[in-house]
Length: 200
Image (cartoon, rainbow, N blue to C red; front, side):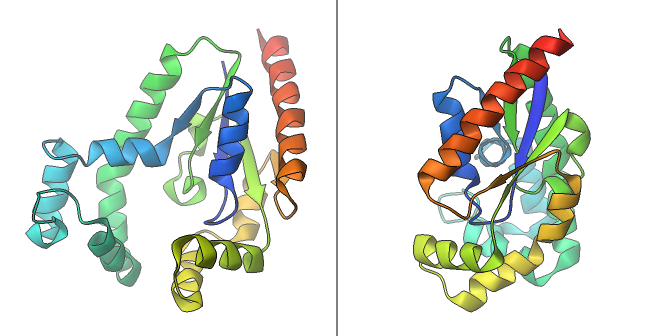
């Protein structure tokens, strides 16, 4: 099983790229979706987060107040590291478990914070979805209806474009239209099938 870690900054087009790989029959294991499931009410991770951060991070329904948590960790690096220390090992264990259940030639593991989380050892190859910072800004402002300042703060809190590219085995340039993206996804799909076949 060839494991490809797919990453990219906010607004780079990771979700769209994953969707395109999925239409080709590639299983997608999404770290963000796993993280969401880990903080559902009754989950040990949510209990630990509440112990460490206080009940102010919960909504009146007892669910995690994501907006409140985002505000806390963007303004305090230590709190961000604390949250990561609670979630990242659990996310990793679940990703490894899901990978082990697959029988396809290769899979995509979507890890937005691949550089920051140090989870690169889970993958055989790293695929970076790349675009310019100005393109990221424009996409996220339109998508999330946020101010330029808010989006810029998120981008600056993530690993730099250069740091992601330094880790890349493969790069998809997502500065063009959907057709340009799809052609690259299809090309890499064939490449990964070939690599997987030669490894077996």
